[in-house]
Image (cartoon, rainbow, N blue to C red):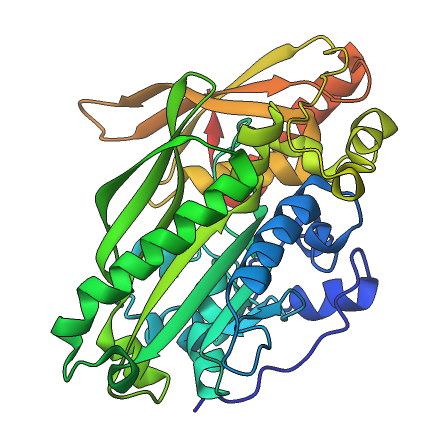
Length: 390
């Protein structure tokens, strides 16, 4: 069984939360700590809350227990601070998997971290006796800077467990096809609720916690788009959840991805905006029941490009650079790309050049602001990563 995870009050921007998350063994920076407790998926009329509500309601309405009650239980307030055991060990993540490293994951201390996926709660909920559930929340990963990636985003996981007795089988192998068909039917119905009638296709994939594993793609607005991953849960995970003679399915999806596709939202940073030109557009969608809404972009402000080139230690990771840029520039960094990489043929020293695209979503940045931020970035790269500017 898991040791209890100490609870935090987790109010966004709360100084006490920041202090507890940013201890001596933590790699969590202030810009990330300030996102904990914001809970965009619970804010009324937020596009992520809208998608979450539609999916929850579909499962609550469609699946009933024998007594007529809702089969599925929904969770959207689970603490984002979990243990390594919950996030990795119980889900069969190899010890040397990159997702365990500090270049990918935000650690509170040696044993606790900000969950990198909602699947981290899977075995805990199974041990508590839940057999059909949906859990939604904020997840955290160190990542690239561009219009589709952000270090805090939101996922929904779904699980349904069947006993072999109820399925009329005596082993997992005989249950797999039955459970997989149930999964496909459930997700096809869910997609229709969100996107309407669309063409769908299933492609084979790989996930550590499911076998077989599939990705679901839909044909929407003239192109094929991957919308979620899913599969039949591995028996070892069910055993970790104290279940024997059971087989289950699971799926995971990104709320931002679905919202960006459905509402045609061009930049993931917008989900964090308090600008009324963004937030007001989604008011009343749930109450009206309309699902053909398309976001209307407001004016784009000028973009400014700045390059930074340096010699770097061999152990440096691109995500280390992204983290510094995010911490200094915040959401005014629209995109960062590596435009040159060089290894000296004689000395073996390594060099990279990054191009930072500066653009605010809410106003025009001045040259003085951009130059000042660029100098801060350079100073922090030198101080934190030990680089040598070229």
